[in-house]
Length: 264
Image 1 (tube, rainbow, N blue to C red):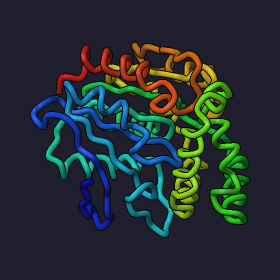
Image 2: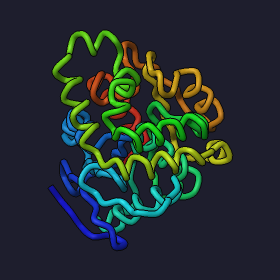
Image 3: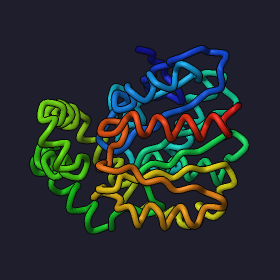
Image 4: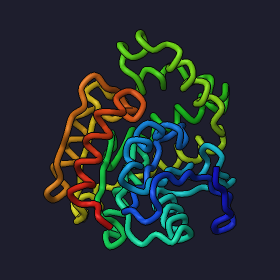
């Protein structure tokens, strides 16, 4: 495990693969940590340097008492990458991680060699739905929403076939920081990146799980159609977390895209 205090905040990351290879950065979803990328990182690290990290308020990274935005989270990522002396990188972002990718793809395209946006959209949920989720956590902690979250993350088939896996990821979810989760929900509550997506000039692959209930495939595909020259791919038998439910399929899509575009 690697830690550093960057801009006054403790950040946790893992660094896989040859340091001299082109770099790929993995950005996790709400309520998860860098471990969701373990299988994908292992597959990619044979050819690329892979950096996975815990974004602010998640995993072993610190959070703030105050509010922050998606743009602030994008700044956090660039601060980590600068700390690691990486100039250009491919970014693979899931859900809110994909929203961070949308910001950087529009605002800092010179830093990105390629972009993969997974189960994400410019705007996710409504202010009311995020408010209801925050109130539920304030009353009963993350345990209060854990079961509905698992239903959004994983298909019924996966939950039936892999009950121990689902139980393990449920445990990981409820052990996340409730304060960090709420602060990130507040960032999502006000986020609308619609003005960013048409300005993304980085080669972009957009991926959706065909059974994702959090960001339905039609919502994800609608975003892809607004990004110049983006390619859209659907992963079958998959919910909101492809790196857990369909890691081989996601790894193949990501490696194909960054092999074509992500050479640093």
